[in-house]
Length: 337
Image (cartoon, rainbow, N blue to C red; front, side, top):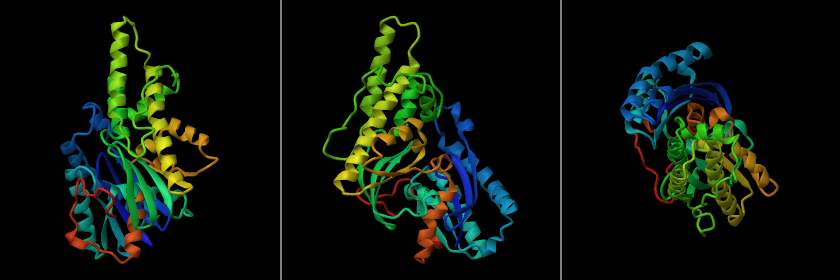
């Protein structure tokens, strides 16, 4: 089944073509350099960049794959969550293609797309499984009972873990995005140098809280500066803060898997690329099977959207021209596919 995927939820413009679990092409244009000078994503600029780059990427994909677009089975596009202006660009472009070529069009939940990134690397993956969804905008624990039934059993009550990485990186004078900067800096730091708190780690629920950890890092920096330190131990601070966040993530998701009697755990989202997170999985691998997407499928990309959309197309779904994007549309307990 040939599916064209389109992703424009935030600061990556992407278009992809898949055939089942095979990725024929996955083109991604990252806006990181554009937004870096602002220290974060500027929504209006992001939308303008998508508007400029998406048609060019489509032309590049057609040229590189030699695909006759009239032969594809359908089009999948991110409908949310995300930045509304950015989403509108992708949905509008997808509608235009669907109209031009007479193809079915399905809107895909961005969160579900990240889950399905794993199917591109692990075609054998089957529910039930637990998902640790970690990104700049979301920190969730999901329970997947079948391909169209995904429930939220844990979430961050304040900052997402990726957001916490960004804020801590800013406190330490590191660049944007914060996650990769802290990951890199922490490699030469001591994760035990500072005893930062592990908020909600041992609570009975599966929820997270990272705002207090960020505040603890701020207070530690102030204490060091008040004490007359000439140069902040940025590497040790990075390593210690990162260790605290990862300890909580892994403790919570393995607790959820154990208590739901599920042995398969899937990682998803941009923070799944963190090298320390991947390294520490070994401590739990005797009791659980971990599925981790390749690095190119951790960040936002259209191949994952196409793969999730394929499931909807197989079900005969077609949103057509009634499809409208929504920046935040999943319910409290269940993700709307």
